[in-house]
Length: 208
Image 1 (cartoon, rainbow, N blue to C red):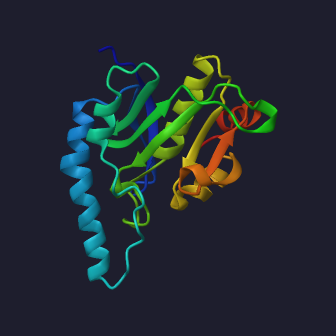
Image 2: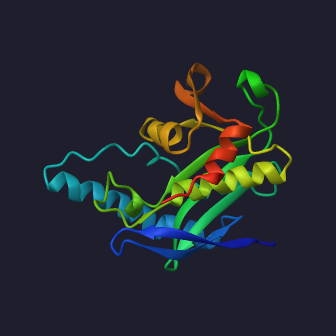
């Protein structure tokens, strides 16, 4: 399997500096091992630690996601693509996208989009679990990767997704996507979509 990779930069909170990371257009066995052996133990450890400190931990709405099952279910399916970001010898974020969906915003309705099925940050990068978080920019870099894939596929930057409630503000404010409201066909999760102009603006704005 041929894997492309690009140098990207994450903001390391402790040092207040940008550090070199790697964006790959694949989720490989190394990432699944990191998820199982590091992400999962850290997630539950952080929640127990917060509870012991008398701080009721914010519910982690992606806690039930099983990346092993997700990747296994799409192996050899050309309509799906995966991405990851690694830094410091560890997977920092993962994303799975679907190329078969169509846009819903009236101005681009019916046109193809890159639909983000799943996007997740490593537990130590989540301020709700670790304050301060270890790295920032993971989510924005993965959104950027989805936009660039959309452009490469001829979709001109159009992307869409259903957001977990904890991430609504990120997609609306940080990413500048259009909120089309709760979708009764998808557990009432809010559906967000990015237009060509919004994608262009996102790529032009410097990210922290």
